[in-house]
Length: 338
Ligand code: NAD
Image 1: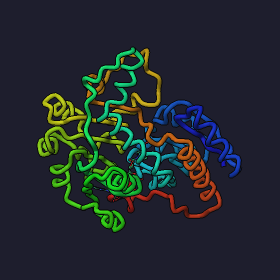
Image 2: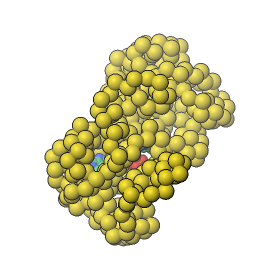
Image 3: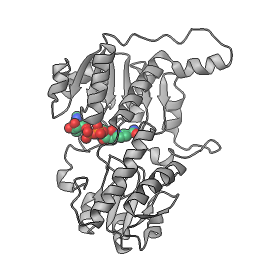
Image 4: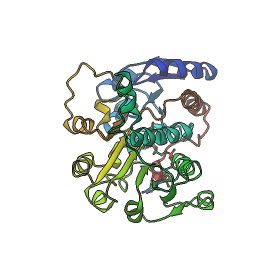
C-alpha cells in the first residue's frame, strides 16, 4: 500500500523502510507533523502513518478521508490524540501498536527515578568540571520505601515488579483490573486517594482519559506525603504542571521526573537549542534542581523501534488483505483502555 509517513525522523526512515520492504508497502516520508495544513500532503495515499504529537482531530480526519485515505496507522500505543468517532464517521480505520517492548518504557522510568533521587545527572556534570564535592547529591535508599503505581498494565506491571523484587520496596497499586501475579509478590491494590496518601514515590502508567486527566492536581499534591517524588512517563496531561510548580516551590514535592509534558507537541522531538521557548510553565519547571525532564524518549530502544515498525507495517498489510486486525482502535472499546 502507498503510505504517507508524517513526523519523520532519520531513525523512522531506517526502521520503517526495512519493515515496509517485507510487506511490500511504498513509503513516502514527510518531516512535518500532521495537522490541518499538512493533511493535504496525504492526498491520494490510502494509508497514513502518524506519531504521538500528530493532530488527528475531526477536521484532520475529514480532510484525510476526502483525500482518499482510509487507514491511519499509529506507530505508537497511546491514541489520546485521535478523534475516533470522526474516523469512524469518515470510514477511516485507526490502528495502533498496543504492545512493543514495555521493557523500554518500564526500564527508563525506573532509570529516571534513580537518576533524580541519586542526582546522577548532576554528578556527571560536576565531575566533568573536576568538582568531586558531594554536597547537594544526597539521595535515599529505595529499599523499604513505598512506591505507588497508577495503572498496572503492560508497563506498570513491569515497573511494580522491578521495585518490589529488584529493590525490596513496598508497592501499592491502583487499577480497575487487579493482576494476580502482582498480588502474589506482595503488591497491594488500593484506591487512588490511598495510593496518593501512602506513596513516597508515585509512578504513572495509566492512559490519558477524561478520568485520568490532571489526576495529579493541587488537591492530590495536598493529600500526598510531604517530599514525595513524582515520575511520569505516560502522558503529560496526567499532571497539572502549574500545580506541580506550586508543590515544588513549597517543598511538598521532593522531586519530579517527566518524560512527557502536556504541551510537548510544541517542543519535543526537535532541536530548539537556538530558539526562545515561549512556554513559561515548561521553562519554570526546568529551573528546579530537583526536576529531571527528558523529551519523550522512554520508548526509544532498538528493540522497541524494530517492534513498532514491524507491527505498524503488519497492521497496514492486514487492512490491505481485508483482515480485521486486532490492533484496530474502536471508540466503543476506549473506556479505560489506552
Ligand atoms: P496498558 O493498556 O497495557 O496499561 C494501562 C493500564 O492502565 C491498564 O491496566 C488500565 O486498566 C489502567 N487504567 C486505565 N484507566 C485507569 C485509571 N483511571 N486509573 C488507574 N488505572 C487505569 O498500557 P501500557 O502499554 O502499559 O502503557 C501505559 C501508558 O504509557 C500508555 O497509555 C501511554 O500513554 C504511555 N506510553 C509512553 C511511552 C513513552 O515513550 N513515554 C511509550 C509507550 C507508552
